[in-house]
Length: 484
Image 1 (cartoon, rainbow, N blue to C red):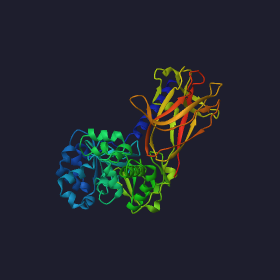
Image 2 (image 1 turned 30 degrees about the horizontal axis):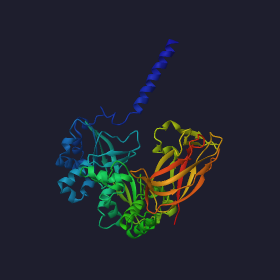
Image 3 (image 1 turned 90 degrees about the vertical axis):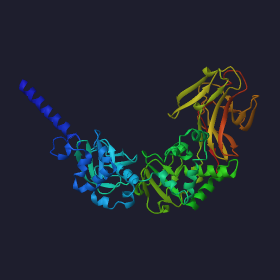
Image 4 (image 1 turned 60 degrees about the vertical axis):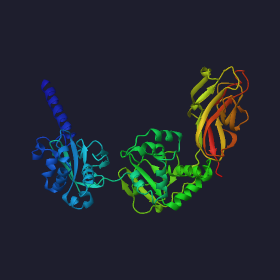
C-alpha cells in the first residue's frame, strides 16, 4: 500500500513537471541551449547575424547598439539585408529620420513568438504601436525567422523594413489644402463645438500632442492622434461631403450661416469614424457611430485602396449617404436623472425606484409623494437638439396610489435675477396620470427654432398642497424629431 502511494506521488510530480515545461515560452527556455548569442547583447547578436548585418550597422550608426547593451530586456524586429537595400535613400541620408526608423523596430520587454495573446499591440521606441499578429506577422511584415535570443532579449528576422507610418490625424493634416473635410476637421483646433472646448484651448500646453487636448473633434468624437487605439475613418470626396453637410443644415440652424455650417459639418463628420481598423473584407454593410447613428457603408463608393496608417485605416470615399431618419435620433431623458428640484429642502419626499412592470421588464423611475406643497418641480436638461419640431411622450407610472393625479411639463426657460422665468418654449397642459397605466402617453409637440441645448425642462406637480393630489412620477421623456 505504501509502495502504491509512493509510485502515485512520483507519477504526479512527473506529470506536473512535463505540464509546466510545456506551458513555458521560448524566452523562458532560452538558457543553456548552446547559442553563442546568449552571452552577448542584442546589438552584438544582430551585428553577428549575417542575414541582418546591415540593420546591425544602422544600430551602431544611430547609437541604438548602446541602448540594446543595457540591462533592460528588448525585442528587435530586424529587417533582412535585402529589405534594407530597398530602403529610401532619403531616410539613410537624414540622421533624424534614420533614428526614428531604427527605433520603430525596437520594443522594451522580450516578446517571443509564443505568447498568451495571439494578437497584441506593442509600443515601439518610436512611440508608434505595431500589432504582433500570431507567430508570423508584425505590422505588415512577415517574420522570416522568429525567436533568436541574446543576453538581454530576443530578435526576430522580418521580411521588410517597418518604416514608421503617420497616424490618421497626421494624414489628415497633410490633406488640409486638398480636402474640404480635412480642412474642416483641422479648423476645430481653433473653433469650439462645446463650451468645455474653449476652456481646454486656454489651458492646453503647446506641443506635438496639443491637438488631442484642444481640437473639438479629437476631444468629443475620437482622438485620432492616439497611437494606442485603432480607428477607421471614411474621408468623403468634396462634392458629396458638401451635399451631406447641406442635408443637415435645416436641422442645425444657429445664430448665423457660418455657425450653421460649422455645426452641420460637425454632426456629419462625427459619424464617419469608428473604433476599430476594418480591413476591406471586414467592412459590414452598416456601422454604428458612438452617437448611435446607423451609417450605411457602400463599398462601391470607396476610391482606391485603403490607406493603412499607424493607428488605423482611412478610406477615401465618394458618398456616405446617411438617411435623415438615421441622423435625427430620439432624445430620451430618464426620470431618475433629474439635476435639481424645488423646494430644495424636501429631498426626503423624492423616491428613486427600481421596479418591474407587468411585462416583466425592469425599469427605474422617480416619484414624489406627500410633499405637502404645491407645484413641486423636478428639473432636467437635454443636449444637442435639432432645429425642428419634436413630438413629446412620457411614461409616468402611478402604481402606489389609488387616485388619479395631474402633472405638467414645461420646456425651456431662464430664471432672471428677480425670480421671473423668461424664454419658455412650451408649457403643456396639466395631464392626468392614471392608475396602473404603463403605456407611453403623447403630450404634444414643441419646436426648436435653433439647434442646441435646453438647460431647463421642468416636471411640475399640481397647484395644490393636498397630499395624493400633488404627486409626481416619471419613468422617461422622449423627444422624437420630425423630418421636415
